[in-house]
Image (cartoon, rainbow, N blue to C red; front, side):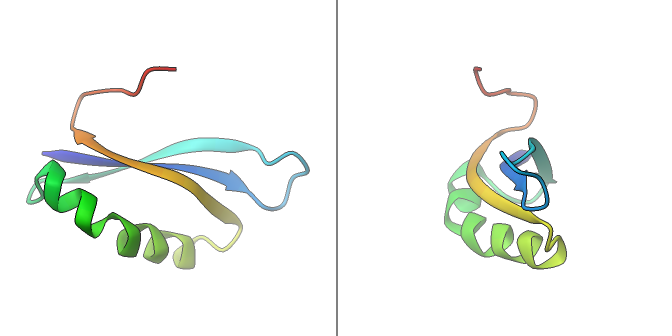
Length: 67
């Protein structure tokens, strides 16, 4: 299982309130996720118009980014 982690920031708040959104994919490897990430992030942004995707990262599920 692979996680596509999106750092998204609200466009409605000054200074941009940001949070991480994790999308889980059972059928994608990390490499495949990396190749598919931009269209998936664009789709997410289209479905959530008040949020802007600032960056993304593919990683194995259960692995968390270091702060």
